[in-house]
Image (cartoon, rainbow, N blue to C red; front, side, top):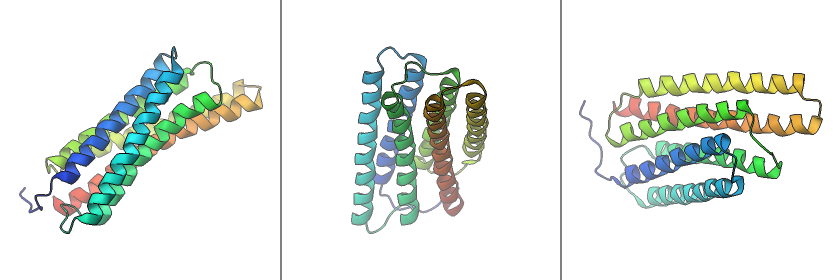
Length: 205
């Protein structure tokens, strides 16, 4: 369906860069959980991606303040930029906790949560691509992310429950509980992105 939108494409370029950055961070976190051979190098790379994400968010906000006619509502541009940045913040937080807590190796549950989060960020990337091409059919993408978020909730709760059943050391319980919760918050942030995309689609579709 045709809908009039201003021809300012710079926002879409920036959103695409931001989503690609998020996808790369998700891939790196999954790789970290799979192979913990050089954790400091991998964690630093994720930190660099998080800094790049901050720069892209600032670029979007700067452009928003300088642009008179925007292709999307201003509040939607700001909300989308913030939600994408939140995903990166959570991915970085998870990676950083492994270093702060001096974790020797990931658990199978951490690997599973990283896989779910990775799948969710891939769907976010697809949603941003749909946005760029003004394809407002976000339904399938949203359904998949909502399903992944529910799965992350379930796996996180199961992982925490197992901790309290099987782990005697309170410090270890505290460490892994925080890690699992940050994984789950990352998937929550992916859901926040698709919620914004659905809102935009309703306005323009």
